[in-house]
Amino acid sequence: MKTMRRTYGLGSIGFGLLLATLSGCQTQVAGMTLPSGHYLKHPPQYFAPDPDFPLQRELAAMQEQAAGLPAAGAAALPPGPVVPPPGAVPAPFPAPPVPPPPNP
Image (cartoon, rainbow, N blue to C red; front, side):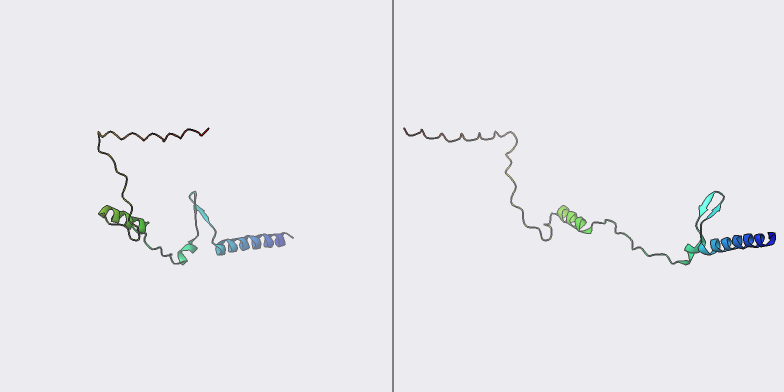
């Protein structure tokens, strides 16, 4: 009876160790949780390098504005409002028209 129990116990411990080594579980070394070495078998993914400025169309529009060129596809803007020179007095608003008297 004891030999049978010992056989089952050792067999289950061996089976557990076998599963642990084949599954690639994490290990604890010196208080650190480390991954298994299985990740070294996979090739690294390629990530294309990012541009210096991620918004290329906006950058081109800002550079064209800085150069004084109209943006591609932009319609010409109407002239802005006329601003009086400093120190000028603005003209007063015209008075509203007086309504005609009612007919008796």
